[in-house]
Length: 103
Image (tube, rainbow, N blue to C red; front, top):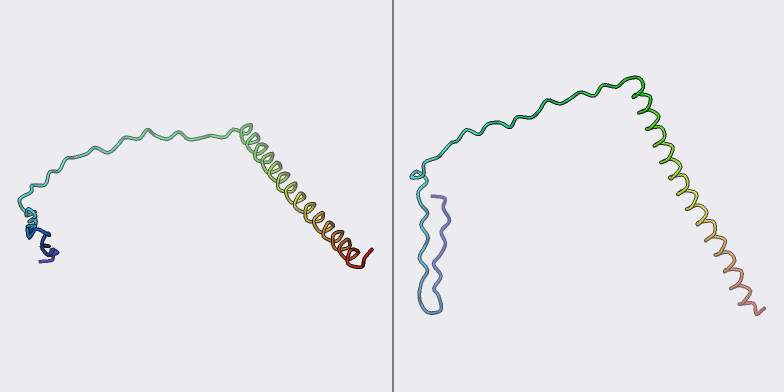
């Protein structure tokens, strides 16, 4: 009922292509096979001793300090670059103004 109907297009020689008739679904027997679920090994729990907790805290503190130092140095580099570009712009403006005066 809801199958699309494709029109038969004639070929340049006058031959037509017949419609393909699908096989009924009722003739096909479904096969079901039981697939066993994959067995995953039990997860081991991580237990932190006071020494390992202290080492973890020290390591994460060091990472925070290193990342902070890198970010501050990048900000400083951008600030220095901006100041130097502004200084060059002022000097060039003065040079162009002096050239226009005829000195």
